[in-house]
Length: 60
Image (cartoon, rainbow, N blue to C red):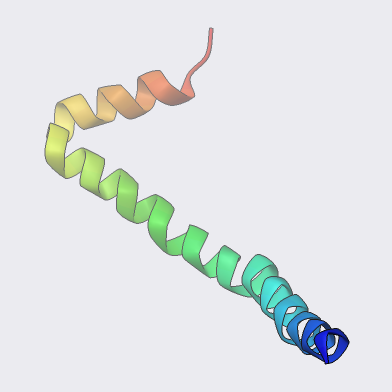
């Protein structure tokens, strides 16, 4: 019986991991990263938000 529970667990778990990693993960990145940047810009204000992003992405 324990073997059947383990097989059913893998049958349900592996497709979910594939779906999350390849489809849902990309969708969430497309929503959460720009949303986080917009929130940063709103909290800091336009000038300071731009300077923080510029400082974060420009390396010397």
